[in-house]
Amino acid sequence: MQISANQSNCPVCQNRLAFDQILHHMVCAYVGPSGDFGETDDGYVCPKCRRGIVSSDPACEIVGTSARCSACGKEMIVSPAASTMRR
Ligand SMILES: [Zn+2]
Ligand SMILES: [Zn+2]
Image (cartoon, rainbow, N blue to C red; front, side, top):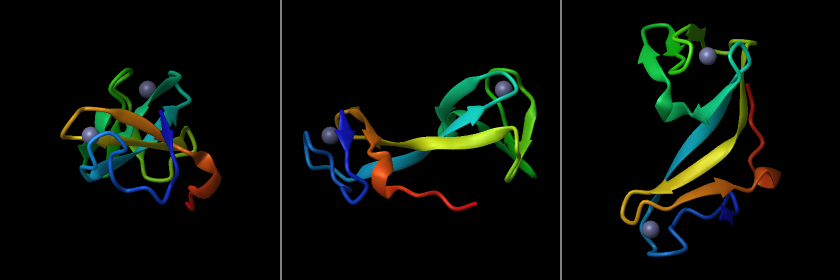
């Protein structure tokens, strides 16, 4: 399912959505929500290759945004058209 960037409530049950950036770790090709990456003092750690990722690391790019409903567990992709990421 895909929703638009200005949508903040679950299309299924109207619960408020939690947004998450989808990150691509180019070193190991892992793609997953930023919540999968463990937080460290100076950035993140990749859940696949366990390498550290500093903020604005060129080896890690934001490829999109996902939204998840905590009430019904539905996961959605946020339409990339309106979600311009600044770094
Ligand atoms: Zn990795
Ligand atoms: Zn829901």
